[in-house]
Image (cartoon, rainbow, N blue to C red; front, side, top):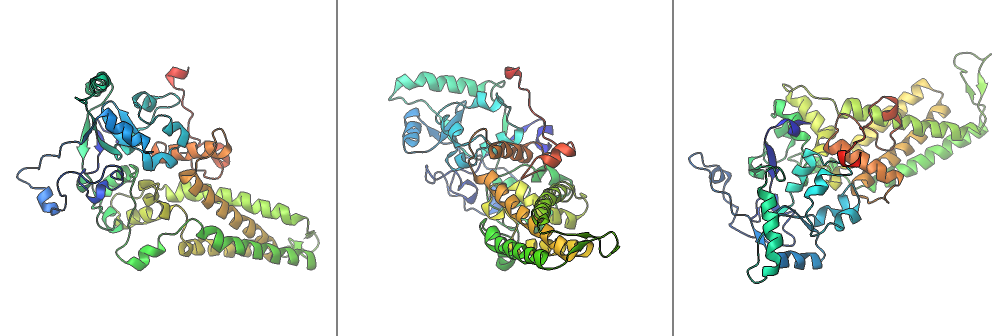
Amino acid sequence: MGAGHANEQVRWRPARCGCPGSRDVRGALGSRGADCRAPRSELRSPAMAPAPPPAASFTPAEVQRRLAAGACWVRRGASLYDLTSFVRHHPGGEQLLLARAGQDISADLDGPPHRHSDNARRWLEQYYVGELRADPQDPTENGAVASAETQKTDPALEPQFKVVDWDKDLVDWQKPLLWQVGHLGEKYDEWVHQPVARPIRLFHSDLIEAFSKTVWYSVPIIWVPLVLYLSWSYYRTLTQDNIRLFASLTREYSMMMPESVFIGLFVLGMLFWTLVEYVIHRFLFHMKPPSNSHYLIMLHFVMHGQHHKAPFDGSRLVFPPVPASLVIAFFYVFLRLILPETVGGIIFAGGLLGYVLYDMTHYYLHFGSPHKGSYLYNMKAHHVKHHFEYQKSGFGISTKLWDYFFHTLIPEEAHPKMQ
């Protein structure tokens, strides 16, 4: 993974002064500090870089008040993080994170049950809100604060991070990203696989931008009625007409198609979709575009790179209807050309339902909180590892079947503390 190859880790800290980069973590705090609305040229003076604003600080009593109000704050050494907006996205489930509210999570990051990836640690830094400080009015808490500060300064427990402002990222987040990423060249692959907790805008045009996003429930609303219509239509054709398989090749050895084959063909279509899902995800969505091709980098970003960059942008988790219609039409024509109309239609209807289930599963894996030990819980952990650490494996979304078959399963971790 790109970030893991650097000798110096990068701490993504949003500006703590009410600028757009900090809006995800200011809910419980309000805006603080100096006004950030200065021109970008003033923020990047070539003569002398401005000193970073001092980190906000909170006493244990102030942290406890926020916890009592329902916020989920944790600390890493003396650094404080507001994970309230991240709780429902946590791969291990909401309860696991809520149970650690107000606690030091340094040991949890290293495991067991697993060591959190570099991207997961970088992701955490986006929720940084300040430092824990002693309260002169409450000396009973000062021992814990001193312990936290000692832990923070110990390089073995708290690696040194380089503070990076959103304004110094490789792209300008105040402008549409699609035209910018094409110029990242060889830096694109590393950049796109360092996820961020903020939405993405792709296009300048509001109309085109609207077509590039959609709500999750548009998928069943649009496609389930078509699945029902096609299923009923082709089932009636199967029961009323004399449908023979291989009739176009030979009449002597052609086979009658009883109506009982409908369920088998429909399930075959659903299974066929899981293979299509795997192939598209692995070989198209995870192709590595040439670093010297602006347009292929842009194509990759609009197809899938945007999702890896902002995995919790809820408007970009399922396929928008317009591009989805083009892909669905292609598969319909393809099946009609290679199979008898009724057979191909039934398989297509099953595959279309498989696609709907895939998109709904994908959305749930990002925003749902499945019961621990359930199938969806395991799939959620599997998929989040694909996003944050194993981008070159774990391509199945609705099933791991083809990952097993093609040997692309995400490896199980054997943590030293659990051996």
